[in-house]
Image 1 (cartoon, rainbow, N blue to C red):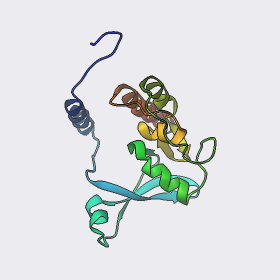
Image 2: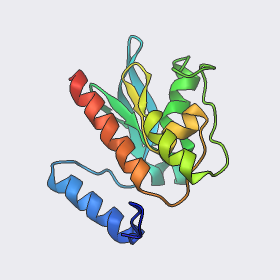
Image 3: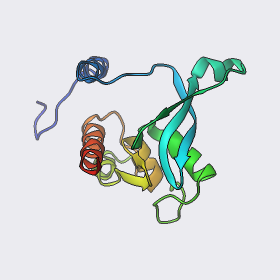
Image 4: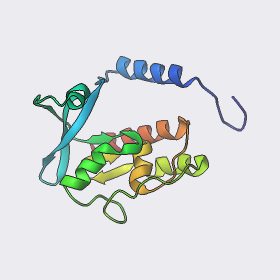
Length: 164
């Protein structure tokens, strides 16, 4: 405890332990995978079209795989890659302009607060969490801080669980 409720942690150790705990709880982690597209059923995102990142980098022609889910989450960080695909191919997002508002310059205090506030369903079937949420809703980036991002993921999971 560094005081005032703030804690310092080794980022690599924290990340590895979070991944291990997720796997122990039943999650599957797909390493070195890119989302090429989304699956749509009517006007709802219900899955991803994925491929190995190395296939894209090498320019190979390998058919992708599709995976379905009742609800999907874009937690791709600053790039908000899945939301960009949905905006381009499916239409208007649940933002003031209907598009990605783009992240603002770093302000850790505001970024930490808004990353949780901005975690929500951005398009039917698609939730946005973590730094992708701040990119989509035009809030500041926050620097090397885990707290808000962890709370954002927790919020996304809780909202989705209520909808299931």
